[in-house]
Image 1 (cartoon, rainbow, N blue to C red):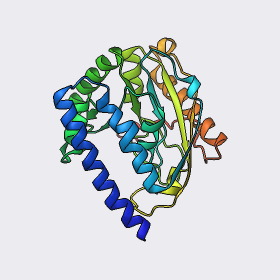
Image 2 (image 1 turned 90 degrees about the vertical axis):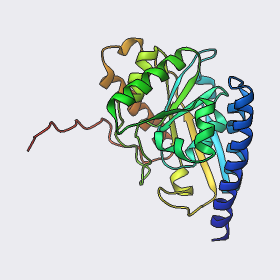
Image 3 (image 1 turned 60 degrees about the horizontal axis):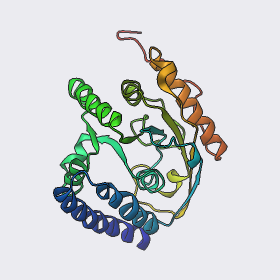
Image 4 (image 1 turned 135 degrees about the horizontal axis):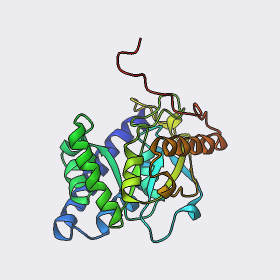
Length: 252
C-alpha cells in the first residue's frame, strides 16, 4: 500500500518536474535532442526506479545504425513506455492517443518535443497525422508503436492494427519487432497495484518493408508472429499465431 502511494505521488511529481524542464528547453531550442534526452535519460529511469523495475534487454545490436526505424512492440503495462524510452536510441518518439495532448504539462511537452498524437476517432485526421509522421520518419526520427492499440490484460499478444505498418511502408523504413514480458505482473492494466520485479525486452532483427509494399496484411502477420515467438522465448504466453480475419459488415 505504501509503495503504491509513493509511486503515484512520485510519478506525478517527477512527470511535472521534467515536463517543465522539457517545455522550457523546447521553447528555447525546439530541435535540440536534449528535449527527448530528458524523457529517455531522466524521466524514464526515475519512474523505473520508483516502481522497482529491473530491466533486462537483449538484441540492441539488431537496431540498424544511422537509419530511422519503426519499433513495433507488444503492450502489457504502462511500465512499457519508460522501459522502452530507457533502452532505445535517443532520437525516438512514441505514437500516442491524441487525448494525452490535453493533459497539462505532459500534453504541452509531447507537442513541443514532437511526439505523434493520433486521433483514432476520426479516420481523415488519423490519415493526415500518419502522413505527417511518415515525413518525420523519413527525416530521421525513429518511432515506437504499440500495434495492439491497448494494453493486454492477460499478457497475451493481441491482434494488431494496420496503421503502424502502413506508416513504415509509406516512410520506406524497416520495422524492428520488440517483445516485452513481465510488465503486466508489475503493474496490471487499470491498476496502481505495483509489484517490483524484472521486465524483459527482446529486440529482433529488422524487417525491411520493401518486400511488402503491396502486402500490408502479410507484413502485419509476419511482424506479429515474430513478436509472439520472442515473447514465448522470454517465458511469456505468446498469442494466436495469426490475426483473425475481421467479420464483414452485415455478416450473420
